[in-house]
Length: 85
Image: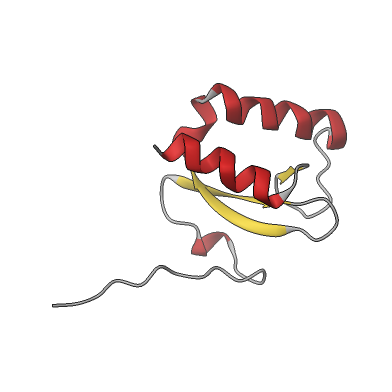
């Protein structure tokens, strides 16, 4: 019997490290951390609010080279936990 361990995605990882049906976002205010989330989150109103905040703050020019969400990491984790349930 095999035990599956979750993959830890490092900052230096590339688009190839993102599983099909997911996308990467950078979260944080000073120190940015990379998260991989399911595409299904895009249809959730709470996640859409975060995207609107990102658009207001960064427009379409994200400093990390990928989608950057301007909120605290713990807030993002709490929100995505709610969306997963």
